[in-house]
Image 1 (cartoon, rainbow, N blue to C red):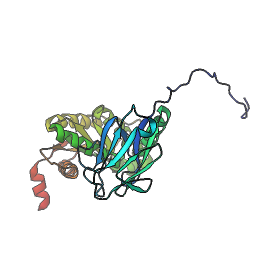
Image 2 (cartoon, helix red, strand yellow; image 1 turned 90 degrees about the horizontal axis):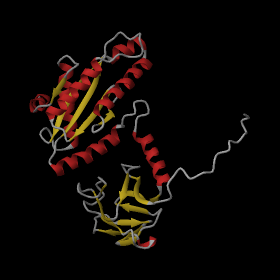
Image 3 (tube, one colour; image 1 turned 180 degrees about the vertical axis):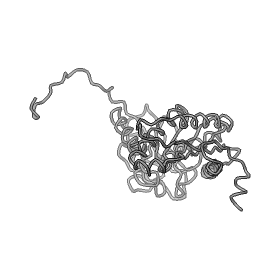
Image 4 (cartoon, rainbow, N blue to C red; image 1 turned 180 degrees about the horizontal axis):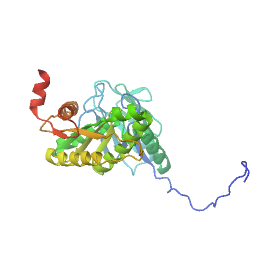
Length: 307
């Protein structure tokens, strides 16, 4: 076949369902650029308060900043209406300050300093945006989340945990022995080991846990609806899997293991970053204790860190 030959395809039924448009708000300027929110039928409160339907955690946005009302049975030009809720910094639609305004596909909506695009998109466009989001949010080598989208998910999960009164546990993980592999075989082999172990961790943490790449050979994960004893069992399974790991690179003789620190919401911390910091303190203790072990956080670790 010549390069300029065209392959004839069967013009049968479309691979995609007919357009059934759904509304979205996507941040196009702001700290969480690219984040996307569904606008559902009924009232959609927008603000930085934890119980808002569309939560945008930016200091220029009021706790309850605005509201989009969706009435699916209305005419298209009246289906979506936005109201400012007497916010401190106001709401703009296409650069005009508004108290009330109809929204149409493509409108730019500004809350404080955060600018969003209002979209009505069909199945094909949703698939495209989902794939684009995956390319942005996930590490291309390990297929784990990048740290920023991980924190966004953790923050939302902590809000859910607070509202339901359920626990959540964070795991900080660091590979032991990778430097020796890099020194002996080079960084390409070391990267192969990291990628292979990342897949092991991701499989063990799935389907309910969320895992991200934290640094070169460091990982972080969280387990919703999971108390510390259960999280320690999960962490021990991860440690055991890594301890038994055999690289497909047969020339590697150096052992690789993993150290893990575990902290629980709400008993160890009530906010996200202190919770992560406490899991990291437990990891530090695990490394100091000889590595290849799992250590739960306790308050004495914070006292020791102050000294």
